Image (cartoon, rainbow, N blue to C red; front, side, top):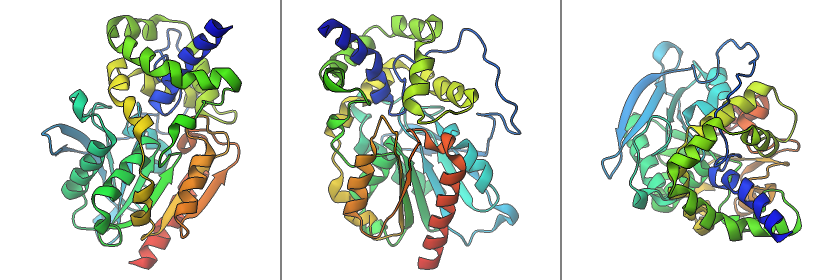
Length: 346
């Protein structure tokens, strides 16, 4: 029984590491699945390409969408994606808000089209400094609204810890979505009893071991069974969603090399940015939580909201971790309310 539970824990640990479900074991599809027709296929929306150089010299891929008419008097929205994803995860928000605001999207280091980072710089604090570089390079001296999902929310907290004086001056608003300010060791990926408790005992060693044999792991991700797809559907989403949402999420996760997953993984257990929330509370803030989020349970969002009395808490009862896809209309409308609040406060 112990071996069986350990196997379950091992099969799901990549989900926690990826911060968006199915990470380590998400594989590319062998059999093409039929996608629903969309006006703009996932991964096809592009903006003006920019390169931002981080403080260690690493190049970050970024894209800028200009508002209609070239207006520059409103705030710039900067979107910060989660672990093992890329900037394309904001597909629906980008389409819905395009033309209304100036928007910046970028790939976190070692993700998407950004350069690979040295292992010692794969930390939440470094991601905060990367966000600082993005704002300095692309905000054009305009007020900024930060939108962070999962690890992206942690990145925003790291920036707040490093530059609390920015919140209320350069930073005009913040959205923290499906994220945590600390205590992720308590997460059990929705597994009851012993399997859940074993996740945190088995996972660090398992991820480190896999990273030492990347070719073997990557081969399994490409030609294995549909386990990754099943786990993604179960742990990334809280309700029934179109199949292409799962495919798209699975593809982003599978595109993240196992050694990148391993490089960032240790930082989550040590993540503690509770104190940084005081600075964020100086500006209009939105906290969005999914009632069925198996990666960062809703209790983490409750903790954040309790420490920021002025924040608006939006609970989407049947949403999972990938709420920007699953509940994209609700998320986009909540972001519009945040922008209105921030603009009134300027």
